[in-house]
Length: 230
Length: 298
Figure 1 (cartoon, chains in turn green, orange):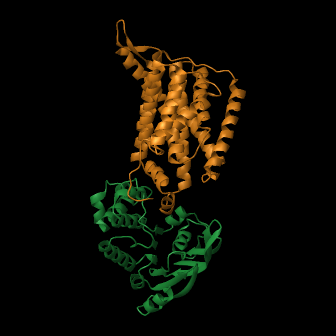
Figure 2 (cartoon, one colour; figure 1 turned 30 degrees about the vertical axis):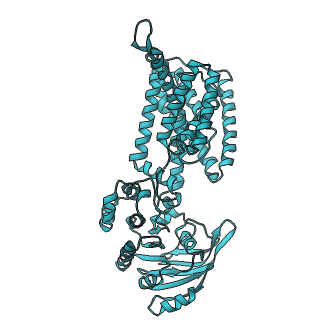
Figure 3 (cartoon, chains in turn purple, green; figure 1 turned 45 degrees about the vertical axis):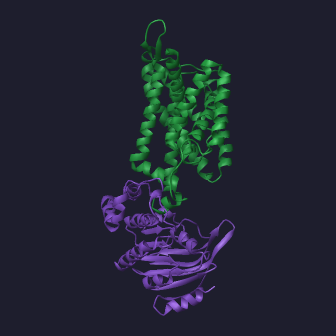
């Protein structure tokens, strides 16, 4: 589904990723685990097209998209939920959603589906997104991403910094979505247990290099925890 | 008593002119962060549009109305060319943008001298704008000039149209989204480079409208843009960058202050007072009149 090969990328003069390769299985979940600063977010930003890799390729369904700008990747079915519950802070919840619906023929239906999936958002449609709680903002971010009817969802630490009562809810949603078919997920996570429960394949990223990988089974947890030990 | 009223009206009409010249900048500078020194020359282009149309059309009244959309298109097209040729390569470099657009500004001024001559040119005032409305008659009359009322109406119409566009249309949502979070907009499938261009064209087009309005209150000349551009930047900065509401308040506040000071002192003293007031205000509130409220740091 998504194949990243030999990716070298960074910002200005620093190189963050030194030749990363990974595969997201069709209709499956791959997870990238690693410490802060390992390059997990940079990897997702390169996959979505927000930074241009120095070398390496990004292939989506057999097609080389390495040079495609981010907005055109979005139209090919890549949706991105960045770290930290980001939104358009001065747009209301409804405006955040309509922004995505505007450009789409099925926009109205997609908007209704998003609100059905996250009914909590119905209560806050007129509130600026910047004034929502972390959990609400993450639901809004997921809703925006799903409205584009993606084939590939890139999630950057979706439960980080969210109140514990909402974490479970968001995890359940992610498991539901990935089990639905037609959607592949690349999940960057700190919660090893949840990540391995969701994923068919895991990758451990350390200092910009994949240091271990394998199928996401229960046995993998001990190996991953060992690999991540400081 | 009527003196106070008539001075307030003068202030409001100065404010309306300030608002019109600042409105386009509130988009290109306020929303996009581009310091476009050639904005004043887009205003000039709008004014010369009135001058050029008056010849073939004849009637000053008709040509002024025709000039409104034409000037918007002319200045908008100049903005599109400037954005495409230069500014889009310099979005991350505000100081370079300032220098480059200053150079463009000087070239456009010289172009105007070559085309229309260095001296100012004049346009006829339409008959329906040359009169005055008498609100209070008698020995101490209060009258309002039609031309000033027209500018006030035009400024308010432009603010309302721009506000509605930003608030209610898909384009407006896209413009605001790109300003607030460019990467997220791009990753959400919005062609941010195209939104930048459209925003810049809108802001430049508004400069064209301001140019049309300025022909009613002063002469048309190659340096008319330079004379007003600083005031326009001041209005946007005092209003709070990126805040349309702040720019409206700032324009009328500065206009009224200017008028009141001009009445009680002289034009120069009034000017100095206004500038000192701005400096003092920005010391106290560097972010301008209007501030954002948001819980997230982003």
